[in-house]
Structures are given as C-alpha cells and as structure tokens.
Image (cartoon, rainbow, N blue to C red; front, side):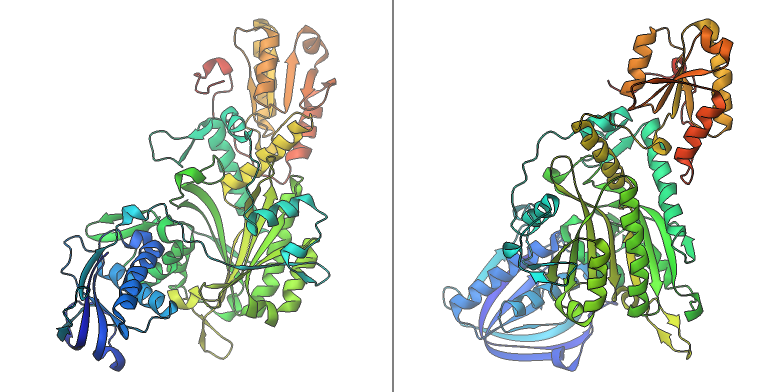
Length: 613
C-alpha cells in the first residue's frame, strides 16, 4: 500500500465519468466533496495487499490517523489514486481494501470520507505548505506477514442449569474443560511434549510431502485407503440425518472479482491461497461453501423441498503459519466433508441443529471420547434464543464456553466448535456446526414460499466428524491414550488397512493359506498373507507393529483340524477359530461401516519397501 498525504487548507472533487466498467457505485453523498483543513490520503492499493487484508488495513489506518493527529486535521478523505505504483491490485481487490480502510478509520474515531473508486474525478487542492503537509508512506506486506491481529472477546461459561459464570469465578470439576478454558480465555501455555501421532501415521504411510510447501500430506496405500474409507463414512453419516442430501463435486478455484466470493473470503484474510491466471485473481477454496453456494443459486427451490442438504468432500486450502502446522491436524491442504443444510427460516434451522448436534456427539462417543464445546455467539442471539441455546447445552451434558462476537460482523449467529483434549492435554477442534443467516442473500440463493414469494433460506454449515484428517487425528489420539494406559494402540477394525494377516509357518502351507485368505476376501474382509522368507517370530512382530487386528497362524495342526490359531490385538490368549467363526467376529465389528478392498497385493513378498520402520 502506498499513500501520499497532503494536509490541505481546502480540497474538493467532483465525479465526472466512469473509468472502469465495474466501478464503485456513486451516490449523491459521494458524487462530490468539499472540505477544509483536511488530510487527503491519495491511496494506491498494490498487488498482494489484499492477501494480507487485516494487517495492511490496520497498519495503513494507523499511519493516516497518526499524521492527521499531528497536523490537527479536521477530517480525512481517502482518495483512490493509481499513480503511486506500477504493481496494482485488481480493481475488485482495491475497492475491498479501501472500503475496509474507510471502516477502520471510522472505527478509530477519525472523521473520514472516501471518494468512489473507478471514476474520473476533477479535484482542486490547496496545500498548507508546512513541514508535515506533504508526506509519503509505504506499508510493506513483508513487514506484516507474521503479524496476527487478534480479536478481543468477552467470555462466559454457561452451565446446563442455566447459570452464566465468569471464567475466573468458575469452580472447575472437569480437568479437561479447565484445560479448554485456560487455553482459550487465559491464553495459558500448554505443556505439550512429544506427540505419538507422527509415529502412528508413519505406520500407515501417512507423512508430509517434502516436494510441496510445508503443510501438505501424502498417503501411501494404507493411508489412502483410510482416507477413502473416512470419506465414504462421512457421506453415510450425512445421509443418515433423515433429510434428502445431494452429493456434488466442483472446482477448488474461485474468482475474487465475484463480489459474493470476495466478501465471503475476506473473513479468512491472510489464510487464503491465491494465484493469478490470465489477469484474474483466484483463491483456493477453504471449504465447500463457494462451490455449493454457486450451484444453489441456480437451483429452483420450493418450500416443499426444505430442509435438504448438499454435501461434498472438498479439497480445502488454508495458508496456516509454518509454526502452527501439525501432521493430521493443522494443515494447508485437507479434505473437508462439508454439509450445508438449507432451511426455510431460523426456527427450522434451530430444530435441524438439534439433529446435527446429536449426530456430532454420537460419532465422537463411538470412538470412546467426549467433546468440550465452544459456543461462538452474539449477545443478541443468546438473549433472543435463550431457551434454544440452553437446550443445546443441556444436551451436551456439561458446561460450555461462550465466546461473544460483535453483532453483524460474521454471517453466522452461532458457531459451535467441538474439541477433544488430546493425549498431550491440548484442546483439538474436530466437529463443528453453525447457523448462517447471511450467505443466502450474498450468493443469491432463494426459495419460493407457500405464498409464491422469493425468500432467502437459512443455511447450516456442518462437518459432523470434522475434516477427514482431524477425525483420523481423534482416532489416533484415542490409541495414544490407550497406549499411555498400558494398552495396545489400535485402529477400529473397519478402518484397519489389513484386518487379518495370515502367516503360514512353512512354504508348503502357502497355497492353503491363500485359499483361506480368498475365503475371507469373498466375505469382504481385507486380508493379506505373509509369504516372506522370514522367521515366524519376525512375521508376528511385524504384524504387531502394523497394528493388524487379527493375526492367524497356520501350521500342520491347523491344516489337519481345519482351524486357525488367532492372535487378537489387545488380548493375551491365542484363540482357536474356524474360518467362519473368525468371519462372524469381524463382521460383527465392521457392520454399518464402509468397506473397500485391500489397496495392494495380497502377498507381502510382492510389495516394495515403501515405508520406513
């Protein structure tokens, strides 16, 4: 951002004619201006300023306000001026930055005006001529890249009994809830430690991709299978809500020249990935919102269709800071099973969120965990919908942390974040839902009411199990907690890449072992055979390292008796089972979950060594 500051005894302008096809709207109040003792801020928005929107606006507003105070100007006028730099932002970016700059100046209590962007204007200026009457400033992005402008909030704790308590006065009974509040409210440094998650991920060929920028993951055969299973599972959950749900797919790039895209994207500020293609500034999506909303605006929707959902497992991108990146949790590229539920009004949305909330809580409890919730909310919504919010809290069965946000700043009125407390005693957000009252109008999504009127629906955003990677983090973290208790860590059987490993004790038993494996495979059980030229002890140890739930050893005795000697992960005793008995045990564990075939050869001897031990 470049600014030329002129302290003018008098300054005036008048709009003459359009300079850009998509110029800013001119109204009577900004068609002309005349002022005295005014600080004129001739302002050029440069390329990349928009990518760091909050910081660039904050710093520029401070520069202008400081000069205005020093010269004792009565008011400030922001005057778009494209002649201070050759590296210009796109017109839509520049308009957005200047609007934000104007709003920031007004919020700071500085009397400010703004000339319209994209018009030829005639102006007259008379400069005072004192030492501070002509100044230039350059606000560089490089100076601001790591700067985080942290919003300040009010906090409270709401109990299921309906009591609102200040966090510093609350008597904690649950250590996990205390950890959440201390981190969110009091910014307490977490103890941390060495996480077990990276070593667990390595077992399933999940790791960082070194050929990309940091924050991107890659998945070998086992990891790819796990992610695909989670993707199908997230779709199954969405279809189980009792409403029609439509599965869609789309692009991950959206043009910032589209007002709706730009306005929605600005909430993410410097966390956006952006690129230029043929003169257009594009962003990579941070969830499925842009694509689904762009589709929904073209749908002809009747009140009879509502409520319904739209679902996509969206490849999503967020330019997280390097120091914040965590394998399987905080990423720059991840998969978001994003569900938007379209409702006719707020009351219908409130009822629908009760179903969503129940699903969110049930899913985390299936893996033996509990959530601790943060309710981001406006004070007016809490006051006007007290019974609804209290009902949500009672259904949680525990207190929640309320975080109060400014009225009208965001498109939502309530945004619930569900956190687990991980094995290192850190809050980790997984599931979420929010009620959106703004984006339908922003994107032009409408439905026809009973009276034939066009209305804007209310939209629920939810990722019931969180991003696929974060849900996997929760599962692996559950294994880490089990290991800290002295138990063997494991994946749920439905998610284990290999569910049964068969180990023949000699080559003569290989054909029989393969025959048994194919019978298991026909029953839709993922099975492999360790036919390597290794000792039995080594093969068993390798199966243990790979967290195989069931390891079946076949020797002459097993062949003669038509049975399997089975080691069940987490149990000490070896059990003798017939093949059909093993199939039934596994089927009982995986019924209701998706299945996919083994993503690699059945025989271990046919596999390259692609995973570091």
